[in-house]
Image 1 (cartoon, rainbow, N blue to C red):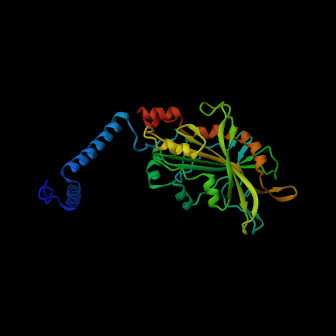
Image 2: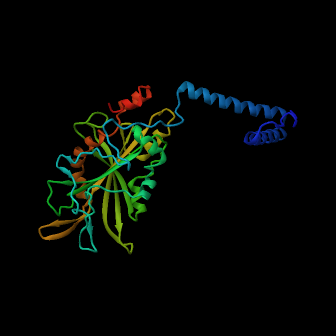
Image 3: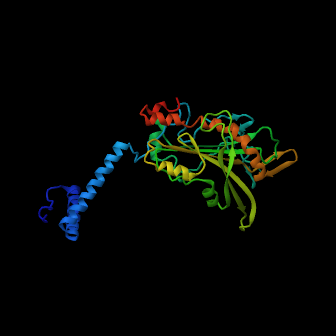
Amino acid sequence: MTDQQLEISKEPGLLRAIARGLAWLLRALWRVFGHVHFLVALAILVLTAAGWGVAVNVLKLATEKSPVPWPAGVEVNDKYVMTSLPDKMGPFEFVSADGELDYDPKAQGFHKDGRPDGEDEVAPDVMELLGIGTASDERNLPLRRSNWLATRTYRDSRRAPGDPLRYWRLEVYYYTGGVDLVPHTPEICAVAGGAQWLGTTNMPVTIDGVAAPWGNTPLAFQRAMFQRTDMQGAAAGQFVQYYIFCLNGSPKSSRNEVRFALGSLFVKHAYFAKVQFAPLPAVQQQAGGLVYAVPDPAQADQAVADFVKYFMPCVLKTLPTPRDIDRLDAGAGSEKAGS
């Protein structure tokens, strides 16, 4: 092989530049490794590339993840907020009042903004941090294939004003079509907000009245414990967050389980959702005046199963099932998800 044989002179523009770069690389390899070694190395590269291509086709490996449409009938608005959770789930009622929770300490009163207090408006910079509302989401929203979130606060109608467990915050985050590293868990986000993480343990909870793989067996919800700190950095009480993941319709306890599955070459269609909840500290109006009710983690633990049994069946209705994923993998069509 000579330099003249590798000379490229007819390719225009970018193609000519690429060809010259390749020619330079081949000449360099030729001079370093010599005739025999160069041909062996080149043959190995060609066979490896060809073998990978064959493996991808024969084994039907998924080098990219295809998005999973959420079920028909589930509504997501143009702000990528899922709006299909019911306002009443057993004794838990969505806080539709304006001026019940948003207490302004400067004004010494409850703030009204014309919106339900149980409906959170997520700032654009937070949406960007969450990876929801991207250009890809904008394209996929009409196809029911975008990422979305839902953050709502519910009132336990059985508990009197002033009860620390009267209000519960529920958050659901849906991601699809990408190999996401699952960065958003309480252990990361709460610490970023200034809290000290004290540890995470499993909390078994059984949900009745839902189909497998969610029903009639204890599910390992995660219980993450944190220490609040004041402006001087001193300890100022503890709080707890609970969460679980749904990966392609099946429960998963840790983000590492989700990461492993998303990285699998045998998973073609993929979505995951994080379901997170906790009792909400709030200034409450009661007969004797205002009281700042802070939930005790030990008391919250006793109330978790009660909240889960009411909200989790409603959340699962907004997520694709394992059967939906099987249909997609079999090529039955994305529009049949959740039908």
